Length: 155
View 1 (cartoon, rainbow, N blue to C red):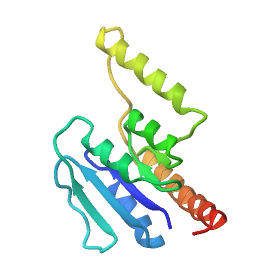
View 2 (view 1 turned 120 degrees about the vertical axis):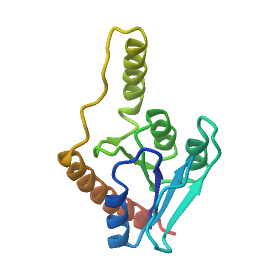
View 3 (view 1 turned 135 degrees about the vertical axis):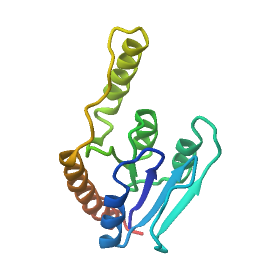
View 4 (view 1 turned 45 degrees about the horizontal axis):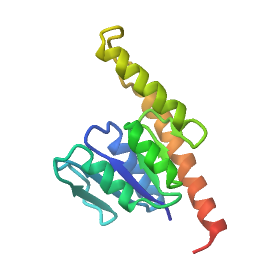
């Protein structure tokens, strides 16, 4: 069964993750620099890491395995997890893969540079109901794909 890891500091879809995890009886670990409210469920764990810049990212990378599911909006973390064969989804339902993570990192770096120089301002559009729906659809698909992949690989 895949394990779900959540970069939880600013994740807007935690309740959706809990619902899907309950439906499929998945273990969920939320990782953050500060405590985040979690439901009373033995399959849900909250891990508070230190205040270091990448402490949550490093913890997730140290624990994630192939076909686990990582929920994050942090592109460098996504890249690290994709390299470990995890299934990585952002809160808007975008799946990061080996085929696109390099380009995604490069685009992130370019946009960051443009914002720093003042050439480009602003960020992503506001998070809305459509994003939440797309996330739920993608998470459901990735849970099924991860389960299928693990059955093929065996114990």
